[in-house]
Image (cartoon, rainbow, N blue to C red; front, side, top):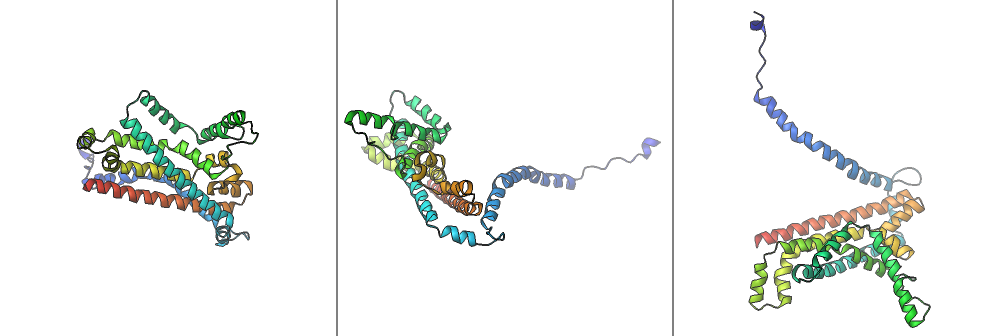
Length: 298
Protein backbone atom coordinates (compact mmCIF):
# COMPACT_ATOMS: atom_id res chain seq x y z
CA UNK A 1 0.00 0.00 0.00
CA UNK A 2 2.78 2.46 0.89
CA UNK A 3 4.53 1.69 -2.38
CA UNK A 4 1.35 2.55 -4.27
CA UNK A 5 1.00 5.84 -2.41
CA UNK A 6 4.55 7.02 -3.16
CA UNK A 7 4.74 9.68 -5.85
CA UNK A 8 6.91 8.56 -8.77
CA UNK A 9 9.76 10.94 -9.73
CA UNK A 10 9.02 13.39 -12.50
CA UNK A 11 10.71 12.60 -15.78
CA UNK A 12 13.61 14.81 -16.85
CA UNK A 13 11.95 17.08 -19.39
CA UNK A 14 13.89 18.47 -22.34
CA UNK A 15 13.62 22.07 -21.09
CA UNK A 16 15.86 21.68 -17.97
CA UNK A 17 18.39 19.70 -19.99
CA UNK A 18 18.55 22.41 -22.64
CA UNK A 19 18.90 25.08 -19.94
CA UNK A 20 21.83 23.22 -18.37
CA UNK A 21 23.47 22.75 -21.75
CA UNK A 22 23.11 26.44 -22.55
CA UNK A 23 24.66 27.41 -19.21
CA UNK A 24 27.59 25.02 -19.51
CA UNK A 25 29.57 27.08 -22.11
CA UNK A 26 29.07 30.19 -19.98
CA UNK A 27 30.38 28.43 -16.87
CA UNK A 28 33.44 27.18 -18.78
CA UNK A 29 34.07 30.67 -20.18
CA UNK A 30 33.94 32.50 -16.84
CA UNK A 31 37.32 31.30 -15.38
CA UNK A 32 39.51 32.41 -18.33
CA UNK A 33 37.58 35.67 -18.62
CA UNK A 34 38.15 36.39 -14.93
CA UNK A 35 41.86 35.58 -15.29
CA UNK A 36 42.20 37.95 -18.27
CA UNK A 37 40.34 40.70 -16.38
CA UNK A 38 42.60 40.23 -13.37
CA UNK A 39 46.02 40.03 -15.02
CA UNK A 40 45.49 42.20 -18.12
CA UNK A 41 42.50 44.53 -17.98
CA UNK A 42 42.79 45.59 -14.34
CA UNK A 43 46.45 46.76 -14.56
CA UNK A 44 45.68 48.74 -17.72
CA UNK A 45 42.67 50.40 -16.14
CA UNK A 46 44.70 51.15 -13.02
CA UNK A 47 47.43 52.79 -15.11
CA UNK A 48 44.86 54.87 -16.99
CA UNK A 49 43.31 56.06 -13.72
CA UNK A 50 46.73 56.88 -12.29
CA UNK A 51 47.59 58.97 -15.35
CA UNK A 52 44.62 61.28 -14.68
CA UNK A 53 45.71 62.22 -11.17
CA UNK A 54 46.75 65.82 -10.53
CA UNK A 55 48.94 67.38 -7.85
CA UNK A 56 45.88 68.81 -6.16
CA UNK A 57 44.53 65.31 -5.55
CA UNK A 58 41.81 65.51 -8.18
CA UNK A 59 41.59 64.19 -11.71
CA UNK A 60 42.09 65.81 -15.07
CA UNK A 61 44.28 66.02 -18.14
CA UNK A 62 46.93 68.30 -16.67
CA UNK A 63 49.49 65.53 -16.28
CA UNK A 64 48.93 64.41 -19.86
CA UNK A 65 49.43 67.87 -21.32
CA UNK A 66 52.53 68.42 -19.18
CA UNK A 67 54.23 65.11 -20.00
CA UNK A 68 53.40 65.13 -23.72
CA UNK A 69 54.81 68.65 -24.05
CA UNK A 70 58.19 67.70 -22.57
CA UNK A 71 61.17 67.40 -24.88
CA UNK A 72 62.38 64.31 -23.02
CA UNK A 73 59.18 62.49 -23.99
CA UNK A 74 59.48 63.40 -27.67
CA UNK A 75 63.14 62.37 -27.75
CA UNK A 76 62.42 59.07 -25.98
CA UNK A 77 59.49 58.32 -28.29
CA UNK A 78 61.49 58.99 -31.44
CA UNK A 79 64.47 57.01 -30.17
CA UNK A 80 62.24 54.07 -29.18
CA UNK A 81 60.59 53.89 -32.58
CA UNK A 82 63.84 54.34 -34.53
CA UNK A 83 65.68 51.66 -32.54
CA UNK A 84 62.76 49.26 -32.93
CA UNK A 85 62.50 49.85 -36.70
CA UNK A 86 66.25 49.51 -37.37
CA UNK A 87 66.52 46.45 -35.12
CA UNK A 88 63.56 44.79 -36.82
CA UNK A 89 64.95 45.51 -40.29
CA UNK A 90 68.29 44.02 -39.27
CA UNK A 91 66.62 40.95 -37.78
CA UNK A 92 64.56 40.41 -40.94
CA UNK A 93 67.58 40.65 -43.22
CA UNK A 94 69.89 38.52 -41.09
CA UNK A 95 67.16 36.07 -40.10
CA UNK A 96 66.03 35.52 -43.70
CA UNK A 97 69.60 34.90 -44.85
CA UNK A 98 70.35 32.45 -42.03
CA UNK A 99 67.02 30.65 -42.46
CA UNK A 100 67.65 30.13 -46.19
CA UNK A 101 71.15 28.82 -45.48
CA UNK A 102 69.95 26.45 -42.76
CA UNK A 103 67.01 25.19 -44.84
CA UNK A 104 68.50 24.85 -48.32
CA UNK A 105 72.32 24.84 -48.03
CA UNK A 106 73.47 21.59 -46.43
CA UNK A 107 76.68 21.87 -44.44
CA UNK A 108 78.22 19.94 -41.54
CA UNK A 109 76.86 21.11 -38.20
CA UNK A 110 73.65 22.67 -39.53
CA UNK A 111 71.55 20.78 -36.96
CA UNK A 112 73.83 21.98 -34.18
CA UNK A 113 73.39 25.57 -35.36
CA UNK A 114 69.61 25.09 -35.31
CA UNK A 115 69.79 23.81 -31.73
CA UNK A 116 71.92 26.79 -30.72
CA UNK A 117 69.30 29.12 -32.20
CA UNK A 118 66.64 27.40 -30.12
CA UNK A 119 68.85 27.85 -27.06
CA UNK A 120 69.15 31.59 -27.64
CA UNK A 121 65.35 31.85 -27.46
CA UNK A 122 65.46 30.63 -23.87
CA UNK A 123 68.16 33.01 -22.63
CA UNK A 124 67.51 36.36 -20.91
CA UNK A 125 68.44 39.41 -22.93
CA UNK A 126 70.95 40.76 -20.42
CA UNK A 127 73.32 37.85 -21.17
CA UNK A 128 73.78 39.22 -24.69
CA UNK A 129 74.55 42.67 -23.31
CA UNK A 130 77.09 41.22 -20.89
CA UNK A 131 78.74 39.33 -23.75
CA UNK A 132 78.81 42.55 -25.79
CA UNK A 133 80.42 44.36 -22.85
CA UNK A 134 83.12 41.70 -22.50
CA UNK A 135 83.81 41.76 -26.24
CA UNK A 136 83.26 45.34 -27.43
CA UNK A 137 83.34 47.41 -24.25
CA UNK A 138 86.05 49.99 -23.66
CA UNK A 139 87.87 47.39 -21.54
CA UNK A 140 86.70 44.42 -23.61
CA UNK A 141 88.67 41.79 -25.46
CA UNK A 142 88.48 43.45 -28.90
CA UNK A 143 89.72 46.81 -27.64
CA UNK A 144 92.48 45.06 -25.69
CA UNK A 145 93.60 43.25 -28.85
CA UNK A 146 93.57 46.48 -30.88
CA UNK A 147 95.47 48.24 -28.10
CA UNK A 148 98.17 45.58 -28.14
CA UNK A 149 98.50 45.84 -31.91
CA UNK A 150 98.45 49.63 -32.30
CA UNK A 151 99.80 50.69 -28.90
CA UNK A 152 97.08 53.34 -28.57
CA UNK A 153 95.61 53.83 -25.11
CA UNK A 154 92.30 55.18 -26.42
CA UNK A 155 89.61 52.54 -27.03
CA UNK A 156 89.10 51.98 -30.76
CA UNK A 157 85.51 50.80 -30.24
CA UNK A 158 83.19 52.89 -28.11
CA UNK A 159 79.69 52.40 -29.50
CA UNK A 160 77.91 50.37 -26.82
CA UNK A 161 76.50 53.44 -25.07
CA UNK A 162 75.02 54.73 -28.34
CA UNK A 163 71.78 53.74 -30.12
CA UNK A 164 73.82 51.67 -32.59
CA UNK A 165 75.14 49.55 -29.74
CA UNK A 166 71.57 48.87 -28.59
CA UNK A 167 70.49 48.08 -32.17
CA UNK A 168 73.35 45.64 -32.69
CA UNK A 169 72.61 43.89 -29.39
CA UNK A 170 68.89 43.64 -30.21
CA UNK A 171 69.61 42.25 -33.67
CA UNK A 172 71.86 39.62 -32.11
CA UNK A 173 69.26 38.61 -29.53
CA UNK A 174 66.00 38.83 -31.52
CA UNK A 175 67.09 37.38 -34.89
CA UNK A 176 66.15 33.81 -33.80
CA UNK A 177 62.54 35.02 -33.45
CA UNK A 178 62.59 35.54 -37.23
CA UNK A 179 64.52 32.38 -38.09
CA UNK A 180 62.17 29.98 -36.30
CA UNK A 181 58.91 30.80 -38.18
CA UNK A 182 60.82 30.98 -41.47
CA UNK A 183 62.32 27.52 -40.96
CA UNK A 184 58.85 26.18 -40.19
CA UNK A 185 57.47 27.77 -43.38
CA UNK A 186 60.34 26.44 -45.49
CA UNK A 187 59.86 22.94 -44.05
CA UNK A 188 56.24 22.89 -45.31
CA UNK A 189 57.17 24.13 -48.78
CA UNK A 190 57.07 21.45 -51.50
CA UNK A 191 60.58 20.95 -52.86
CA UNK A 192 59.08 20.20 -56.27
CA UNK A 193 58.46 23.93 -56.74
CA UNK A 194 62.16 24.66 -56.30
CA UNK A 195 63.16 21.79 -58.58
CA UNK A 196 60.79 22.95 -61.33
CA UNK A 197 62.00 26.54 -61.06
CA UNK A 198 65.64 25.42 -61.25
CA UNK A 199 64.96 23.10 -64.17
CA UNK A 200 63.39 25.97 -66.10
CA UNK A 201 66.63 27.93 -65.76
CA UNK A 202 65.62 30.36 -63.05
CA UNK A 203 68.53 31.98 -61.24
CA UNK A 204 68.86 31.55 -57.46
CA UNK A 205 67.82 35.19 -56.95
CA UNK A 206 64.69 34.69 -59.07
CA UNK A 207 63.83 31.48 -57.19
CA UNK A 208 64.18 33.39 -53.95
CA UNK A 209 62.04 36.28 -55.18
CA UNK A 210 59.37 34.33 -57.04
CA UNK A 211 59.08 31.07 -55.08
CA UNK A 212 60.55 31.29 -51.60
CA UNK A 213 59.54 34.78 -50.44
CA UNK A 214 55.87 34.59 -51.55
CA UNK A 215 55.48 31.40 -49.52
CA UNK A 216 57.33 32.90 -46.55
CA UNK A 217 55.47 36.24 -46.36
CA UNK A 218 53.13 35.17 -43.50
CA UNK A 219 56.09 33.81 -41.52
CA UNK A 220 58.07 36.99 -42.21
CA UNK A 221 55.13 39.12 -41.13
CA UNK A 222 54.70 37.10 -37.95
CA UNK A 223 58.40 37.14 -37.05
CA UNK A 224 58.88 40.79 -37.97
CA UNK A 225 55.81 41.94 -36.05
CA UNK A 226 56.88 39.98 -32.99
CA UNK A 227 60.40 41.42 -33.12
CA UNK A 228 59.06 44.94 -33.61
CA UNK A 229 56.77 44.51 -30.61
CA UNK A 230 59.57 43.09 -28.44
CA UNK A 231 62.11 45.75 -29.40
CA UNK A 232 59.54 48.48 -28.87
CA UNK A 233 59.12 47.33 -25.27
CA UNK A 234 62.70 46.20 -24.62
CA UNK A 235 64.21 47.46 -21.37
CA UNK A 236 66.98 45.06 -20.31
CA UNK A 237 69.22 45.57 -23.35
CA UNK A 238 68.77 49.35 -23.20
CA UNK A 239 69.55 49.40 -19.48
CA UNK A 240 72.68 47.24 -19.72
CA UNK A 241 74.02 48.44 -23.07
CA UNK A 242 72.85 51.99 -23.64
CA UNK A 243 73.10 53.00 -19.96
CA UNK A 244 72.56 56.76 -19.66
CA UNK A 245 73.37 57.45 -23.30
CA UNK A 246 70.15 55.94 -24.67
CA UNK A 247 66.80 56.86 -23.12
CA UNK A 248 63.81 55.03 -24.60
CA UNK A 249 60.20 55.07 -23.41
CA UNK A 250 60.64 52.00 -21.14
CA UNK A 251 63.77 53.56 -19.63
CA UNK A 252 61.96 56.88 -19.16
CA UNK A 253 59.03 55.09 -17.50
CA UNK A 254 61.48 53.44 -15.11
CA UNK A 255 63.11 56.77 -14.32
CA UNK A 256 59.82 58.60 -13.73
CA UNK A 257 58.23 55.81 -11.73
CA UNK A 258 61.10 54.35 -9.70
CA UNK A 259 63.83 56.99 -9.52
CA UNK A 260 61.83 60.24 -9.22
CA UNK A 261 58.64 58.50 -7.99
CA UNK A 262 56.43 60.49 -10.36
CA UNK A 263 53.72 57.87 -10.66
CA UNK A 264 51.18 59.94 -12.66
CA UNK A 265 53.86 60.94 -15.18
CA UNK A 266 55.07 57.35 -15.44
CA UNK A 267 51.45 56.23 -15.95
CA UNK A 268 51.06 58.66 -18.87
CA UNK A 269 54.20 57.28 -20.50
CA UNK A 270 53.07 53.70 -19.83
CA UNK A 271 49.71 54.45 -21.45
CA UNK A 272 51.47 55.75 -24.55
CA UNK A 273 53.56 52.58 -24.58
CA UNK A 274 50.43 50.44 -24.31
CA UNK A 275 48.77 52.32 -27.17
CA UNK A 276 51.85 51.78 -29.35
CA UNK A 277 51.87 48.06 -28.60
CA UNK A 278 48.14 47.63 -29.21
CA UNK A 279 48.33 49.57 -32.48
CA UNK A 280 51.19 47.40 -33.63
CA UNK A 281 49.32 44.23 -32.70
CA UNK A 282 46.18 45.33 -34.55
CA UNK A 283 48.26 46.22 -37.59
CA UNK A 284 49.94 42.82 -37.46
CA UNK A 285 46.59 41.02 -37.29
CA UNK A 286 45.25 42.97 -40.26
CA UNK A 287 48.41 42.32 -42.27
CA UNK A 288 48.45 38.63 -41.37
CA UNK A 289 44.78 38.24 -42.31
CA UNK A 290 45.36 39.94 -45.63
CA UNK A 291 48.42 37.85 -46.46
CA UNK A 292 46.78 34.55 -45.56
CA UNK A 293 43.64 35.54 -47.48
CA UNK A 294 45.71 36.34 -50.56
CA UNK A 295 47.43 32.97 -50.36
CA UNK A 296 44.10 31.14 -50.12
CA UNK A 297 42.77 32.98 -53.16
CA UNK A 298 45.83 32.05 -55.16
